[in-house]
Figure 1: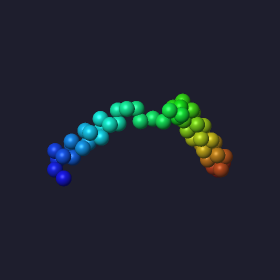
Figure 2: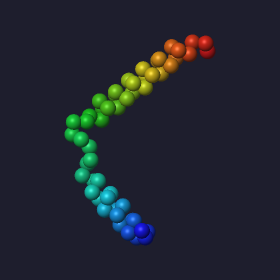
Figure 3: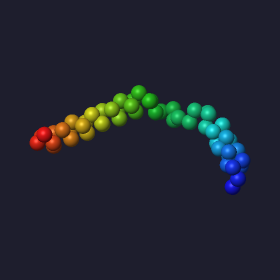
Figure 4: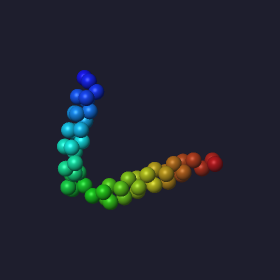
Length: 53
């Protein structure tokens, strides 16, 4: 595969991805809030098990 054909296929792939690509039912705020809650919960669990410090 030459450099020109690889670049051409990447350009066509990038142009096809500009339609949005997100599923309509996914809310970025709900996803981010859930991830933040899970990470804070894991941090809290980790600090409970590490009482010797």
